[in-house]
Image (tube, rainbow, N blue to C red; front, side, top):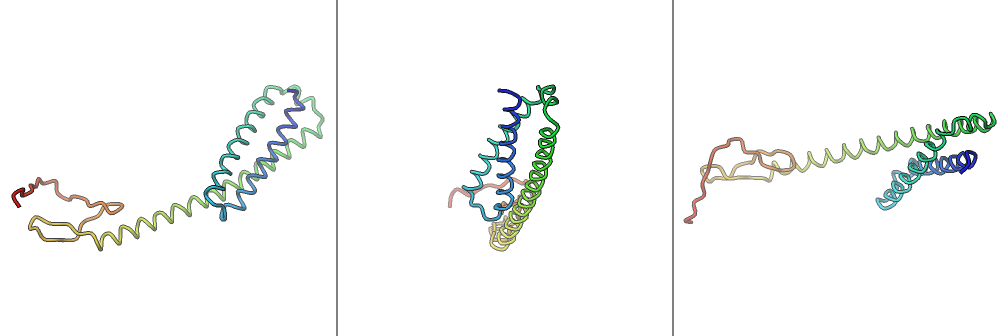
Length: 153
């Protein structure tokens, strides 16, 4: 493949990847899980294709320098546009991640609070008492003492 063909392919892949990033950025709030999985698959494929072309072009520095200044300027401008689209996409993904983490933490706190109210255990006197809870409703043994079970009930 000639350098010019690689440059043309790089432009095409870059535009496709930018379009995908923009669609993901704007549609993140309304995407279903299946649609998001499709985005991830497509993004991964386009990113790998982009990287392969860039690696091939890096080995052709002299041929790239021989291109017209207009073509090189177009590539620089396209690269800057791509970097901006990737930055916006990353910010939206980070915000979504932080929101999801806060939601999960709120759910865990609510479950633990509810479990503290409802969870009981038996003490050594065979009476029920409130359990001391760890994360996700697990009881935590405060003492490591041994106990036995009366098997002759």
